[in-house]
Length: 340
Image 1 (cartoon, rainbow, N blue to C red):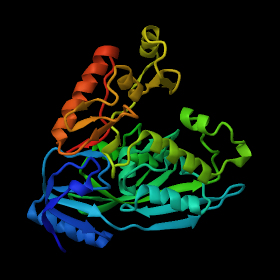
Image 2 (image 1 turned 90 degrees about the horizontal axis):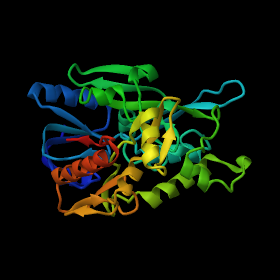
Image 3 (image 1 turned 30 degrees about the vertical axis):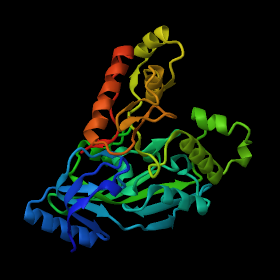
Image 4 (image 1 turned 120 degrees about the vertical axis):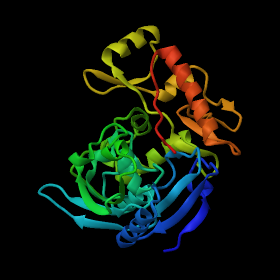
């Protein structure tokens, strides 16, 4: 085992904040992970699992041991049923999520096209229950394998055990207890294409239904995302920084009376999801800066780091934005990335 000391994490988080890991190691197998965790427990090191670094805000150096899972493997098992064909896709946690999506597209297997170009690793996808353009991971999820870090014992979680919610899961509510090492997805032609999300529907409105393919939808989603979200290699960011708040139908009706053009999406008969980016944009904060940090000029939902700043500065401006939205609309925004 080769541990690095005082490892710079600047290139390992997409916001580009310059923090250090007291100890750092890359792990490429389950057996190695068991060995590393056993060593960390003997040394009484706290353990932090680092995925793609695309959904964290580093505000300090990380004590103990930072582990990055490096194995990238994909395996397909044909699970065809009557009148449909399906595949179980098993991916190791270190696999880049978009690579997984595009690999399934290259094989002509539908199911993940709406989740194209989401940054990060496959192991982190269930933590956040990633979602985009009308599809969540939970809609394609079967099970996962994870190691309990304190006991060094393996567990399998099915869909129910993961307790998925909107950008939420059992693992997010029990942060630091488990390390996800592989994920099983069920994909195929058993479900219709999901093209009802407003921007995707508009982009595909000239395409006949019989011309839709997984690759076409995936390419369209990529174009939409690229038009709204900056490339972290060009401008440091963590994607969408705030959750879209879900409010009661009554609260929504009250807001609509005051602001008729408010952007919202019905969830069911009792709940409505508000567009957090629209709320921020409507009070004039899109494209604004506070020193080295700011709000992206093409999408108010994205906070960016222009270089030379700190996680604390970003969080301070995020709190300022949240206060402004609360004052204007009475709605509390919650932050999507993990704060470290």
